[in-house]
Image 1: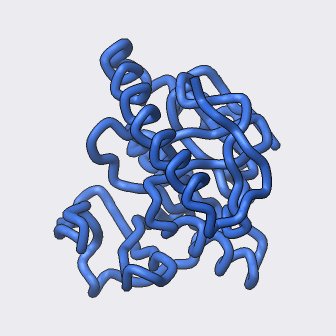
Image 2: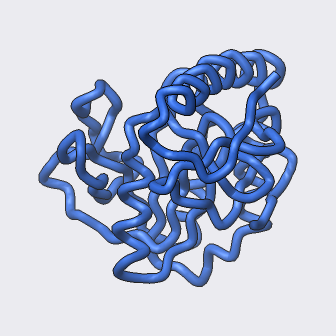
Length: 201
């Protein structure tokens, strides 16, 4: 069973231990969801493309799925078919926001600092206004638990300080819990799409 808390100090070792325990449990939960269904990526894409107002945007970013992350590439392909430019995240430095570089189907990806495929550093840097965000867990208030590196929290905060964006988390419905521990640096999502549909916050 998950423990929950609200607006807690980021310096609390108890809180950080709770979040680490949540991540371990979330990875097991996500792996079970992957094993239970093999059409989740198709259902996710259908829900996203029918429920998210993507035509208001010119550039969207996704991510390259690794491990048990739900596959968002059908979403990106659908968006590109509708005329949007697509980008994938690139790690600049461990304590900085992500950069988003242009991606097309024919492009050759290279391993990033954590081994995740990413566009070559010669690919153009884009500024997406529709950001597709991976997650381990999410709750009914739009809070997200990620891998713990803080990349998306830093990135969303930086983009939001400069322009309006739509941040949409994607995952399995099984990754939703009632409430997550929240840190001051956490960035809320505007919506989450799962294989079961769209939830707005």
